[in-house]
Length: 353
Image (tube, rainbow, N blue to C red; front, side, top):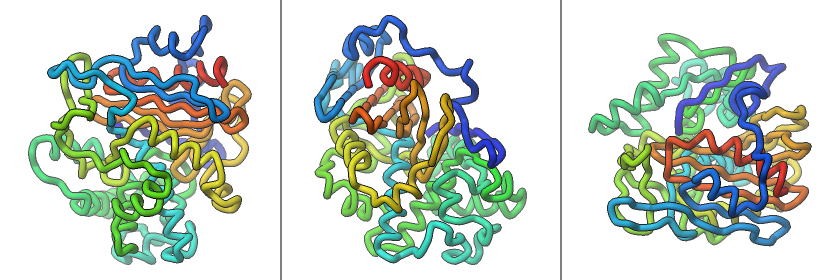
């Protein structure tokens, strides 16, 4: 759940997988097959690739736990970082289905009249990173890692205090700036508006209907077998205060479960009206736009719908290309190789889908 911020004018609510064409690794030219490709880039983790309902690759690479000589397997559970945001955004869609919110254009002030600038910030602004709220991670994460317990409510108070003192980064709706604050607030809103609360609401409305039985909230410490440990180089950096990632990066899953989620979203999970809200419209060639919890990239003459994640020794990629039924799930427990994600996207779009 790294703090990645990209700010542009509303006219250019597009950002190219980081910054510019020159910044994105070119797709591998000598691609032969997906299995060899992931071996060649020394990928560590689990990969599941499907096309038109057929499994192209379902393989794991490297160690889940170096200390116990436990290898990654297709059943290994990984922290998925900001892929979590697709669940949180879906829960907000479910709130609208259930009549608990009327519109994505409702303002925060309707739910909390004490939130500074809340009469300007809509639910849509939160889910599309158009709110102007500063990201809390750089300020809060070191405090929580030092051993001080920081609750999601504490983080909300800190966000509100910052906005009260310094204002928003920009007028809501006038620009885009990736901020984990948006999704923490969305998760707390789900807590407020439902009887079940954030975790159970997602479980009842997403995980159980899709039989995603290996998807769960992550723990601060990884102690059980079957769960990958996260590494920077050979250092185990798995320990992480998960309440800091509330709603923005706090789930754990497997490649198979995330493939079920991607297949559902690629199918008829959303109504036509919901799809118009959730996914961006036309994206210029070579660019990426953000909808409500989902990126849409136009690369290699294909539209790729996806989200990535980075959190304390883990990187994740989940996405689909609808015209070929292409799905890619790549979950890694090597956090210092997050830059592989963009090369993987471009390579598979150019050569596999």
